[in-house]
Image (cartoon, rainbow, N blue to C red):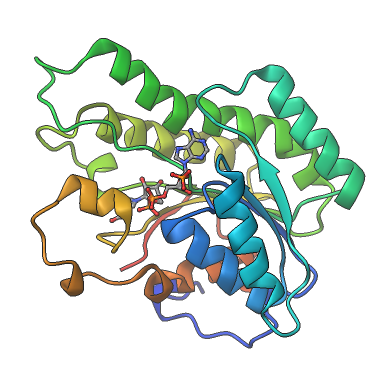
Length: 250
Ligand code: NAP
């Protein structure tokens, strides 16, 4: 029987010995997850596009007692090409030989316009970063996930990726696509060892949320550190067999 992942409680070494790659871990939810996963014993691979931000996070993780030393993977998802993905996967393969968790968290918001007014170049950029790069990352890391005894892929969705909403344009459509990608991957792997699920973080106090709702009372929002239980559940051993599902973190 599955549990409500929002209420999941876990020991403080639940991710011990797990190698977890988190895209967009330089800020927001990805950063909070990287810090928490490391504190729970995971060997975290920090992905982002800003060396400065990633090095700062690296230092923070080094300061956590008992946390394994993280790794840094710098790659801009907007400009990355096939070679960039292959090089990244090869370097992680030679360092670790496998990954146990892949959290596809990085995304961009784009702009809030009607479909009638949406800029076509911006549309392509949002779809590229939010969907095509997620596909590419998944594809190139599948062989390393298959080396794990208990591999888990987490895609990041949104409320506007389940019900379309005015002025959310490419971002909303990219999140519908993300839900679809997660389901297709889950179906391809049936109930084998690899699980593929989506998490919708819900309204969370990050720069992306601020850009979408600049006038909102930030203090009323959950902090990224407060919404992490479903991520830990899906990355750890207690979610074996849970696949093809979409969870709300709040
Ligand atoms: P955020 O604070 O804006 O963080 C986004 C992360 O993605 C940052 O680390 C950012 O790097 C990285 N990123 C963006 N473009 C990139 C690129 N081209 N190459 C590499 N990395 C890139 O956003 P967030 O709120 O934490 O969002 C995390 C996930 O949750 C996203 O998938 C978002 O759609 C989803 N979500 C968030 C909310 C919310 O209320 N916050 C609600 C629903 C869904 P930089 O640090 O360099 O910018």
